Amino acid sequence: MFRINLNKKFGSLFVMFIAVMLILFGLVQVSLGFIGEKDTAFITNIRRQGGERNESVPNRYTYAVSYSFTLPDGKKIDGFTYKIGNAVYVKVSKPNTSMVTVRYLKTLPQINALESDVGLKVGNLIIIGAGIVIIKFSRPSKKKMYRYKK
Image (cartoon, rainbow, N blue to C red; front, side, top):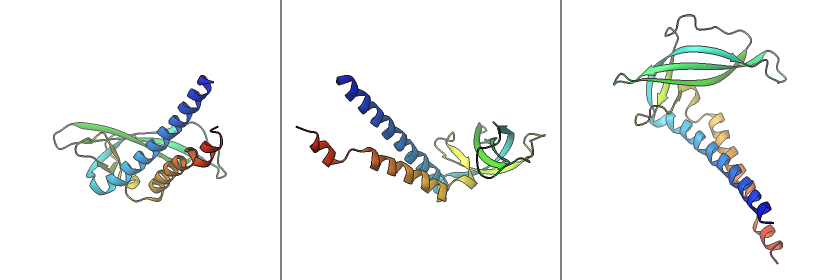
């Protein structure tokens, strides 16, 4: 009986942890849009990952886009993002020729993202909302707790 209760608590704590991580990720993405430093990054690599996505729209693939930028003190920071696109894509033949704008935290530049992904975007708000919904529905209601307590 103790083992069952421990597993239930671990499962609910794990779900709660994932929900908090979703909320934090969404908040970081939103806050980078407002307080993040802006810089220019160079795309270093584009890779198509896996095969065709299992969606109703054919010829859609996931791409990993790697980029790097240099801080004012000369330190080089690398980052990456995932993009969804069609079957036609351009590989980076000469690194450091394609430029994108990134946002990063001045105190911790390893936290960075493409400017097109940060700010009050619908996707970021959905991630925050999903975390809140998971927390709301993963907590046991008070009625259930009192019903089984005898």
